[in-house]
Length: 193
Image (cartoon, rainbow, N blue to C red; front, side, top):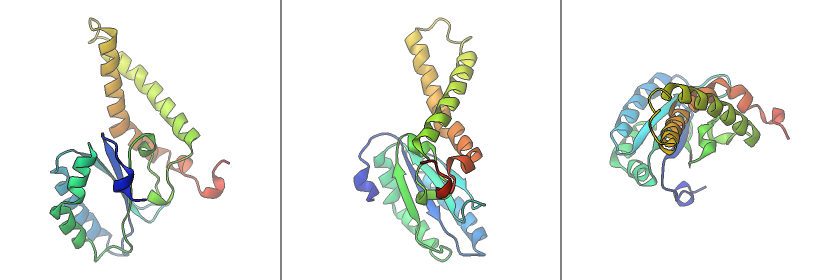
């Protein structure tokens, strides 16, 4: 899929990059990776990143990073700085980097096997999202109740919704996805019909 042509939405975008590293080059990759992440963080619109290291489910590093708009993502992707950093990585890459780009619910869920798996089944995404949002709605409601008593119900709803979406995107879903990875992304033979 040509990601640049396929994505025309404004708003936050998520990129998942799957890296296979030559055996014995993991430390070099880790050191290099800290540098490129620091460089990306200097660019406008960078919203953060998550690194998932190889484990039982995958022999790949998976790097998930976000930008606030397609314009800012493209500025990073086409930058001279990024190009230089990628050239420095050629000696420890075992295969080309695979990228997935997108926005929306499926990018709250990132497979331990990166781009090869795609999102989990919709019913699993819906179930995990319902439980996570239910817990957050109740917790955020209790925490904010003493502070928003005099505000309009519409404003209270907006503030609570914004807090919940931010928590889901940057804190809750990355943690929940890691914790439930075996259930969310079973081997293909174990997947429900």
